[in-house]
Every structure is written in structure tokens, then in C-alpha cells.
Length: 601
Image 1 (cartoon, rainbow, N blue to C red):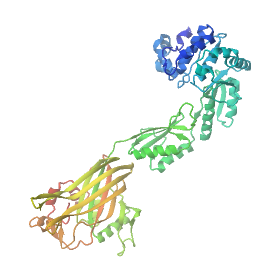
Image 2 (image 1 turned 90 degrees about the vertical axis):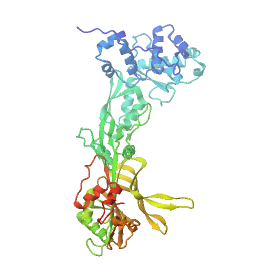
Image 3 (image 1 turned 135 degrees about the horizontal axis):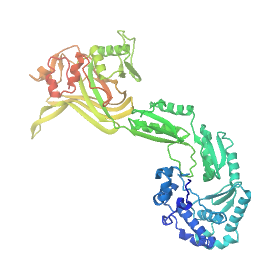
Image 4 (image 1 turned 135 degrees about the vertical axis):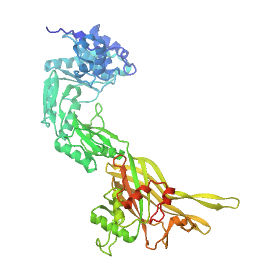
């Protein structure tokens, strides 16, 4: 047996008390409405409720009105499965929309006149469209009634019941053949609107335009960016008189072009067939519901900024949500990107080499295909392997982590002296992280009044900051210093060498920085200056050697993402002790260097 529905029980009632009087006060126009409706209370009540619903400020969309009535009316609750089910069935849910039901012959035209005319006089809207049925007779009769109640004798009589600020405001009455301007009411029948929309969209063959339930409806799928932009501009002219059901579906070429723009910037893009959550550093670029969705987790804020720049450079995309009445017809890009909190590790190793050893290293690296040359800062002269050829000078990258680089260096001969440091720092942090290894020498100092001991620090001092340029590259600011004290007459001076630079090094590879001269003074007695001349102590810090001449220091720098690699393991007998001593306290390490050809400081 069919269920009988009561229209009143399913009507969405507007609460006339639910009104922000600072935004709209019906009392301003109440006298005008009472005279216009001439005691027809149902007309008065309809006008009051419609005006409060539209301009009272409490109902942002019809969804607010629907939720309010769902909670109050049992008939609505019984008919629909849930509140959310009820909301999903609402037409135009993003608008302050609705239908005012009035029987035939009850004077709907008076309600139309009041709502359209008063909304413009109050400054709530600049234009109003009164759209009648297909009959041109009804359209003509409605137009004549508007003229009488706005410009005619009736209008003059009603105008005196308006606030003084509204009485002299001019409102024009137009049809769709007139140029549409502000402060105007357009009266037209739906067939005329249909013809006008078809005429305006004649250059967009992808859409179908028809009348459905008293409205002009546009349907279709558009893949041309230019056609989509044009459609949005036309729809903006007709606003709520046209229901736009057309969708935008970019062509595969358009999506491919966008993805290639990301890839050219060094970003990875997930394949369309892959539905899993993208790994950090990989973008997901999808299209759905007329929007482009760009999502993923990134290693740096720089990547996020680059993605926004790429999107904004596309003339068919915008990252800003379109506002009501906006002329922006571009497709919206919804950006959902997060920067993963990441810690970086940096290993630094100092290796002292002679010129001949540097040459051997360079030749062997090139022959093994392990070196990545930077043409702006690397030089090589001669033929690889020739006696008169030069080694690699400047800055270059070894296609291996620090362990592999040390193993290669050990096989190429150098091992005279080394110093190492390890540091963990936060990605993209503007603050410097500091590291120091070495010791303090107690030096006797004396002034006219005071004699005492002063600590003179020496060793490796490292300051680091920076972050990831992309998932494969770290940009690191380095401030490195190796220092030790030397006697100068009866006083002491600090012998030091330092380097300040910024490097862009691939993650997991090793960058070699050249050009720092050796800190060790070369003579027949090799060792730590000053310490080697102290009785007993010199036994631990010096050795006889005249082979090391014209030495220089190569600085090996290797960045890693914390947790992305396995712990360091010795790679050979030659480098095992180097890795071990890099984490050994300095005082303990110096005691273990007796009889060895290299030392740490």
C-alpha cells in the first residue's frame, strides 16, 4: 500500500528568529511588505521567511536548513535512513537554494516582486533573474506587473513605506536581449534562456543543453582546457538559472605534460595503476570531480615550494578555491603535501695524501667508473695513467658511500693521517649543529701579577646545517677546521686550517673536497707539532719519516638519511681501525697510535 506524504510535514521551515539583525533586519522593510500583500498573511509570511533565509546570515547553505528540520521533524526522520542520507539527496547543496510552494492563483508574482526588488534595494545582490515558464504570454504579463509595482502608480504608492535611503535608488527592468548591468531585474521565460545558452555555447560541441524540471541543464564531458574555461565564463553569466552537470576530464596528454613538469624538476610521480600510498618523496597526481589532486609526503619544504610553483605555472590550474562570482575559470588543484620530519647524518673524513698519491687516486677512480666530475670545479690534465698526467683536483663525487670510498683509498696507497667526525642534524633546520673532537693542552701562562695554566683546544671542529634538496640530494653548509698549538718563542700560537663551503651531494655518495694544505709540518721528524718535542710524550706522537712531501688534505663528506642505511661495518683491515677510531674518545685514541703511520686529532 503506497505511503501518503504530508507536504507540510516535509517542508523545510525557516526559523524567523534565526536571524542576525546586524546583517539583515526585516523591520526595515516590514511596512512595505504589509502594504504590498494587503492583508494576505500567507504572502507576507512567505516573503519574510524567504528574506530571512537568504540574507539573515544564519543559513550558509540549504544543508544548514535541512539539518535543522531533520532534527525537529519525525516525518523526515522516518522517510530517510539517516541525516547524511537526507543531505545527499538535496539539490544544489552548496547554495542557499530552495522552492517556495504556493498554489495557483495565490499571488506568487507578489512574492517574486518583493524578493527581487527589495534584495537589490537592500544591497544584498546586484542582479536578480525572474525566470518564468515557457509561455511568452506569462512572461509578458509578469513583466507588466513588475513595471507597475516598480515604476507605475503602485510603485509610487509603495515607495513611501521604504526607508529614505532606498526610495531614490534606481532599479532597471530588463530582458535577456538587453545588456545586463548592475541594479537590474531580468524577466525572461525559460525558452529564451535555453536559446541564449545554446547560442553562447555553440563553440563547445561536447555539451548537451536541455530543459529539465523547469531549468536549463548542461551535461557532457569536456577535455579541452580552453572549452572548459569558456564554459565556466558562460555559466557565470546565468548563475542559478542554469544547472551545470558538465564535467572536465583532461586528456592523457595534458596529465602526462603535468607529470613531466614534476619529473623535470627532479620529483618522482607515482604510476596511475599504483593505488598504494606513495612512499616519501613520491607524488600522487590524480584527477577526480573536476579537480586535480596532488598529494604525498616530502623530505623538504623546498620540494613543496617547487610543486606549488609548477602548478601555478600551468595556465589551466589554480590552487585557490574559487569564490562566488569569481571570474577564475581554471581547474582547481587541491594540494595535500606534508613534509616528513627527517634527520640527516653526515660523516666527514680527512685524508692526507701526497701529490703522487692524489694522482693515483684520481686515475683509479676514473678507470673504475666511480667518479662523477663537476665540470665547474674539477680539473684533470694529461692522459689517464701517464706519468706526466695530473690527478683530479678540486671537487668531485665518488659513486659510493664512505665505506666504499675508504676501501678504495686504502687500496690506492694513502693512509698517512686521518681525522673523522660524525654528526646528526635536523633536515632544513636553520641552526648550526656543532661537533668537536680533540683535546686541550695545559699551557703555562704568566702575566705581571698572575701565573697559571690555560686550556688550548685543538682538533677537528665541525659546524653543519642544511637539508634535502630532493630525496636524492642533500645541500649542506660546512664549516670545518683542523687546529693544534705550536710554540712560537716563549709563547704559543694555534696552527689551523679551515674551509667554509656549501655542497650539493647525492645521498649515499661521497664528495671529495680538495685544496686544503696539510696541517702537518714536514720534516725528518713526523708527528704532532709541539708534542713531538716534549720528552716522553714525543715517544707517542712522532716517528722518523722523510717520504711525505708536498702533502695536502682531502676532505671526504658523505650524507645519509637517518634510518635509511645499515650501521657502518669495517670494509677491510686497512679501514677497520679508521671507522673504529672515529667514534673513540680522543685521549684513548692517541694512546693507541704508537708505532702507527697515521694519527687522529
